[in-house]
Image (tube, rainbow, N blue to C red; front, side, top):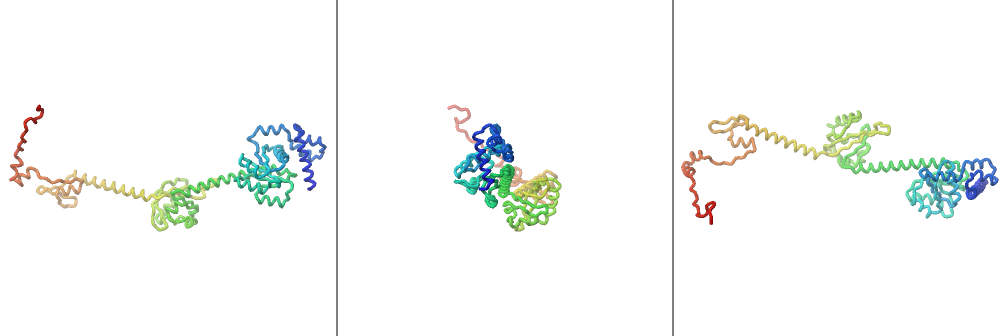
Amino acid sequence: MGTELIQTVAILQLVRECHLTDAGSTLGDALSTRGIRDAAILSWAKSMNCDSTQSATVNQNPERVLRVLIVEDSDFDAIFLIRYLQSHGCPASHLRVWNQATMAEALVREPWDLILCDYQMPEFGVLPALELMRRHGFDLPFIVVSGIVGEELAVELMKAGAHDFINKGKLSRLIPAIQRELRDAESRRETALARQKLAYLAAIVDSADDAIIGKTLDEVITTWNAGAERLYGYTAAEAIGQPTSIVIPEFGRQESADLLTKLLEGKPVDQVDTSRSRKDGTIVDVCLTMSAIRDTSGKIIGISTIAYDITERKRMEAERTHLIAHLNEMLSKVKTLSGLLPICASCKNIRDDKGYWKKVETFVKEHSSAEFSHSICPECMDRLYPEYAPLLHTPATPEPRIPGTESGSRN
């Protein structure tokens, strides 16, 4: 054991005695009474300023307390580390664990901000502690604080996942290391959250029925969702990296360029009916919306387009337009019957607009929805069938009445 380590152990033992027997006095005073005169040690002890008043102040502000899980087989060493943090403006509460069972229970019982771990303990060690933390799904700052680890071993521990190594005899690096690792941990959490949001957004985009495409300002395709595969027929592997002209028919390219110019000028491009071409060459009617993709400074770095098939809507619109035109035509033909019609004074035929003479019923049927039921009027009956005329003009013989059936009769 090196001289520096022996001195450190001796000082730690004195600190332990001060902590247990000199409550209410500062650590520097307590060490002085025990014959410690080294200026560097007394200066360090003064900076510690571990008194009961400061601990009480820390406990009164739980919102500001750093929650530290200490993996250490020595209760005294754990208390010493916490007192060191508190004396350097880092209020902290702690729980000491010393084997796999106690650490596993602590990890699930409450949240932690930081793990300080001794290198080697009778029942535990750094590598098992790292593995246990990962198994529980945590990414906490993990700092090894030990006095028996050389530089080569420290490098190996950091490769295994520890974030830093601090020698117990040189704790001056502990506070800066904790501050740095807390910042890095927060940055990792924010990055992980951002990735989760991106993954969630990507899942929404990919599962959307609409064709959603991302492209550069040079109109090169960068993203291609499943909806685009269904609408246009190209797979993502086939489309990404290709110009957007693969889905724009020749007759629509000028319109597409005009829409891009309009968007870059800050004007909205929303719900535009246009045409696109599929992989098999067929043309599909789509409703298109274009949006600018901006970086954090607001600069436009790309374009996103959302399109959906409106073939069925166009078909229904065409049918409605045809029906309206047909009805208007029928109405216009009916209206012609209210105008001046040339009719023959003798045979009563009517001349149509093409100069043909047609029977009245034929003309009316062609220019309206009227139908005819044929019969014969009395005048024509007298003229055409005189033998039946007396029968038509003879009054009908009343039916004989049965006595007692008259209206209002009594039985």
